[in-house]
Length: 327
Ligand SMILES: [Zn+2]
Image 1 (cartoon, rainbow, N blue to C red):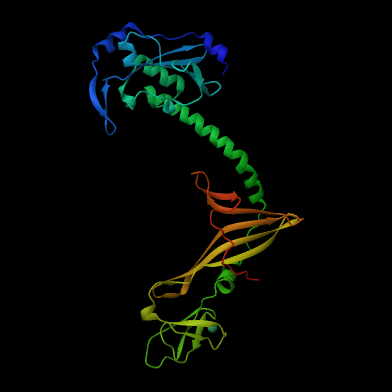
Image 2 (spheres, helix red, strand yellow):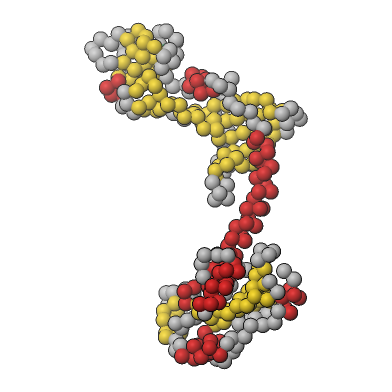
């Protein structure tokens, strides 16, 4: 907004009605915060507005100043809805401010509902701004929407490049989860029905009933069919169980380079459903190497309180620590 143009709009001085209302509003001493006691008015703030040359001008007066006979506004807020811009003139400091109404200083905290504005002006203000709230809250709502929009645009500049990079990531192989289950998750079990002389059990690697000798709940052994290290689990005692979280890596072609994708995987067994575990496999990190082997890191995380997404860079914790690469 051009300041010279705004200056030409002139000032909005308090009306006689406002002076009269403030004259009758005798402040009462009230506790402000922990210790301070200050005179508090029923209506701390008065508002007046006009639309001039397509620009909304809102003047804010303090009850205290009106009682002292000053018609000058403390602040004049100018809003140009066609350009979605606002600027405030600070009369005390004699300068322009870019702060939103929430950040302007007032002698002490007051509720927006203690701001006086005529009902007609209130409607005009909300109509001009296209907001649902009234008075000061309406101005705040409008300015917040502009701030939000500016932030969104700033973030988009950054995230659109990331999104373009992520679009080139190929799908995981069709049998990926099965591979993760068999090769990425190293813990396996033999579930057996408890008896004095256990002869067989279900091996989670073989996915079939296998012969068992000397099975004892929670002890380790080797499956005589597949040779994998297993832990014996008596079905009656096992309950719900899960394997420990493991890191699994998937290298793939990426353009004329390479991508290494990191997943955190785990296997969950519901009580009694030991043949049908659920495989959890969440992708947490991606490293893209171009043809010169220059790497760019991405991680899946929370972005600027705007939900979860792929973010360029490193998370606050390192996801490449304490892991085993599986070929
Ligand atoms: Zn086996």
